[in-house]
Amino acid sequence: MHPILVDLGPLTVYSYGFFIAAAILLGMGLAMHEARQKNLNPRLVLDLGFYLILGAIIGSRLLYVLIHPVYYFNHPLEIVQFWKGGLVFIGGAIVAVIVAWIYLKQKEEPFLDWLDSFAPGAAAGQALGRIGCLMAGCCYGKPTALPWAVAFKMPNSLAPLHLPLHPTQIYHSLAGLVTFVILALAKRKDLRSGQLFALFLVLYSVFRFVIEFFRGDYRGYLGFLSTTQWITIIVFIIGVGLILKLRSQ
Image (cartoon, rainbow, N blue to C red; front, top):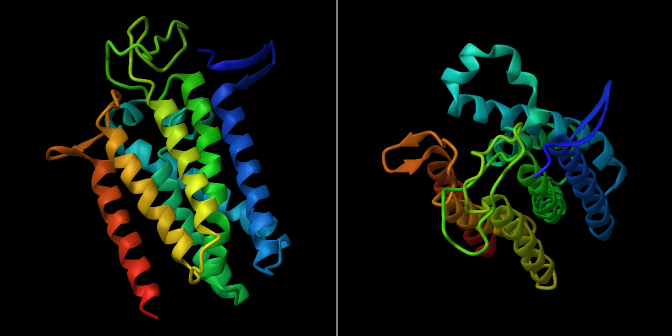
């Protein structure tokens, strides 16, 4: 793969950072579209988007650093170099939701309606952003003999070189795409405010929990499951509980 997309001497564009930026723009564009359909002010997406992006980057990077404490203790300056790879989506999502709640409460905006507006964009953004993971070699899979295995050959790749690995980055991307399609179909139903976002939580947690078994990079383990898998169990319970609670109202 190609961790560096453009290298023109002083100008270096990392593939990971490029696709993350593209995913953010895609997510914000879809959120503005959803906001218009719900008669919400789409301009708030631009205002809120800045804080969400900042919160998501900090949260996703922080969780990644916590999973690899020894490395970043010895290389503290690399903590901020997120554009080279190393973000945990679920960490960013948690912080982003907290930031959104604080912001929207101050603006007296309908919190659940806005969460529904951001859900499809979050799924589509994941589908696009994971291409950056593939290009950079982060979030790589375990060795496999399956015919769709990928092998990384670039010396600056984050993945082990010249080994056939599960293309877990593609698994994540496809999971995001499938989630986006399901959410698009679910919007046609008579859902209560917040149920679309709750469905996103359920779908994301299920897909992420399964894909974690194929990941080959160090995940940080608590017992027999990775740290992320334990978090996805909590997210799944929250998603199902929110769906049931909103349905009973």
